[in-house]
Image (cartoon, rainbow, N blue to C red):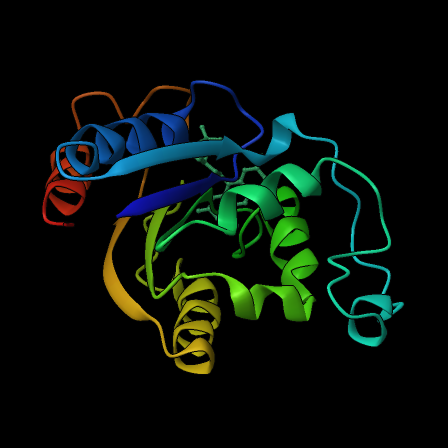
Length: 178
Ligand SMILES: Cc1cc2nc3c(=O)[nH]c(=O)nc-3n(C[C@H](O)[C@H](O)[C@H](O)COP(=O)(O)O)c2cc1C
């Protein structure tokens, strides 16, 4: 399988990147994995022009780095969303990429599976709830298979996730995918 991870933290080598790193180590045993750090790309938000719906084969009227993401997703079997919790949601950078997948061209993508990696500072049991609702609705809407979720609470400082058992969980989740 080809797996594309959309890594949503703007903080390079932070907790999300480390969680993604463990996932990738496991997932690479049986699969081809690409990580896209979305904050490193220049991607503008969807403007709702719907040009993608009126012209056949047009991905988007905005010409920016999203073309790289479209290219990667066009041959992906599985998508992994990875993000720190920002105000009980995913980061704006990751949401921006997801919104740009409004285009009908996404129907041509072979993606049939999805996974989720999250890190939040709060210990609140509900800290991931709003993200999980969006995730579940997206799975349902696109009839995708859920390949697993690793969600880590109580991690705030850069690199604080080091030594946390969740890194093993992310590795195990990756390893289980084939
Ligand atoms: C703008 C901003 C908003 C945040 N909002 C939340 C939040 O609502 N709930 C929470 O638990 N943590 C919140 N955090 C903390 C991060 O989720 C936490 O520090 C995480 O470990 C950062 O991961 P990273 O190193 O991959 O960026 C917020 C951090 C920032 C910078």
